[in-house]
Image (cartoon, rainbow, N blue to C red):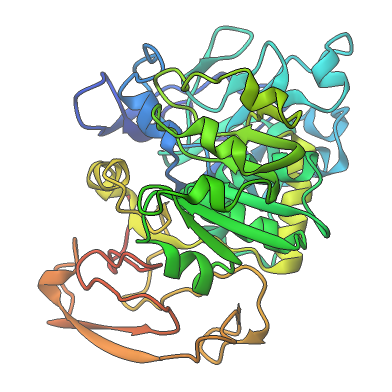
Length: 454
């Protein structure tokens, strides 16, 4: 179907979950009815978020099966409703045209009523009638389906044009993971003069470090259980210091009153919450963005009273947060560390994500693997020179490029096309960590064949 198509079928294809235990299956589903204020998008990329896993297994409560997850969506607009150009939304929404490259995050609708305090204040993400991009219902009771599909359909108000300088694969994780950490950093004043701690160095946490650096914070501290990610955090992502909570028994005392703001991305119910609060300065703020399936640990009153600290949470980000985040990411080259996986490999990728193997964000590609060869992407935040390989800024002042070429036998490439040559060449360079030939754990490509739906 042509990218300029203006009318499409009301039957979509995607990877559908029918219950909490069975694998996703590629089949048809019926999207919401197309309305005048909707757009339709041909999906090219969709990141995997921890929310996808919690939802698929009904970890936060019974999911509304059948369900299509995925809310870090990038694609091309193929249909625009007649009412989009008259939306009472920012120009970024009503100027959307067929052929535009857009992204959709974790929210696809709110009430948008003038008498809704949250919507009227531009905080649609806190609307009491919020509609998630999947596992939710619109006002007409039709079901919201996500981006693990060939197409996405929904309100233009929550679609965002992607800056030309942001590659689609790297832009996708920003739409949920990126804004989830950017919004509280922005709200609580991260920037020059501030010391910020990021708890958990994973899909959310690595983006927290990148955005804290891009915002100009004086000091960015990575906080993790073990030392396994210290090299990534400091040498790759640009953190200034690293705290390990399992291996340093005196970490809370040694770093007491050192941070103005902590963004906690972990979803472990046994996190040392009281000790995290010891790290805050007077009037410091602790923001929880990870969402465990079990209650958070209890707090003693004195952990709040002694320094007047604030403990709060943050829910994704508003449309304005997303627009500001995309502008900053384009300006400062904030690019997540990603591993591309074909959409057809979705069940194995979800299992790897749940097992903590991602470094640091998986991205489902629908049509991005048209070439037999793939080059590793460089994805650090604030670049200081241009790579000779792909003209993309990379941060390598401390680590001279170590460009090297490996030949991977065909059996190491999952799903390689039947006509592939006996081996594939991949150019690899400038990552401080070791590369795993099988899993490509650092910004690698896990499959090189064409990756359309089959």
